[in-house]
Length: 397
Image (cartoon, rainbow, N blue to C red; front, side):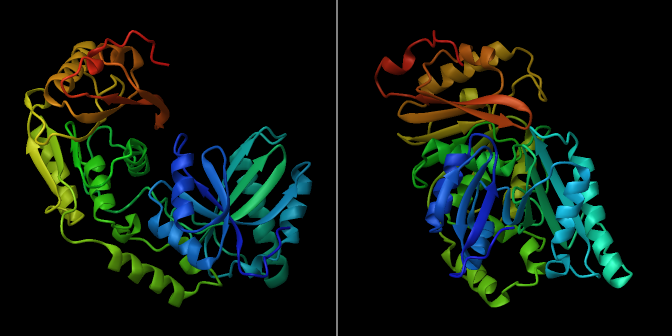
């Protein structure tokens, strides 16, 4: 079983999307976490209760912040049941609280995560029933206590989920388009771009505005949790420190800047998308920070001499284009001609079509947009130079 550290620090696991682990690690360093270690779709570290609250409030690329409290090897079904029963569940859960278990399994003799979750649930409720004659209820949608079970090579880690609802659900989105970008992915893309939060930021195919809003939140130093509608998971824990959490929340509110810090511009050719984006921007109270315009990107010209263009064009997956190759060629031509001096970042899941951009990518970062294998392609658009006009003859890996 995991032991408590006498100085108040404990192990923390923060989950994220594939490709954003190093960005998340930087965010955790900014919160002064200790022993930061990058894993696959997760970063482990050590921190105290205040830092656990801060990670939920501030980390833009975090999906869940977990607090591991038990580890053991489970040889078979009976052994798993017995090990779960050894934990005193009344330390974490009361009879009048609901709970749910999220399970993930890999490289183990157990094959199905749902079966693991069911077996663990049985062990917990059986313990309560044998002690009190009653049992707590399961609520898979809005539980009071959310548990996370992770099994790898039959090693089980049980964690308390401090986040409750997934942290990617910021709370500002009222409307989305056909293929909305996950907020965590949007934030990660912007952070991977190295944007300085001061220069011009443009999303010329903005859809429902997720990239624009995430960029504006960064520029204005708005903590992503400030739009959240639901309670955090840790607010139902037995050791919840309301005073500390209120201090963390008030500090976040105080750090947000009111005056616009950067020029953030969004274009879209579709009036419905512009309306959806404006509704989301208004809901986030960022209408003074973000400028929207219904426009065809291919007819636009950079409004400043330098900045960053970030876009998520169609891949021919969920949104279909009449001629995907021509679309990407036009993107490249417009960037080359009208956006000299900018850095452009294009997230695409269609690597064949991306070859038609006709520019040499200086960096390719593997990412996933849902199940779609993507690359974030960086193009440096040199002013008055032929360097940015080289044809991309290399294969995009």
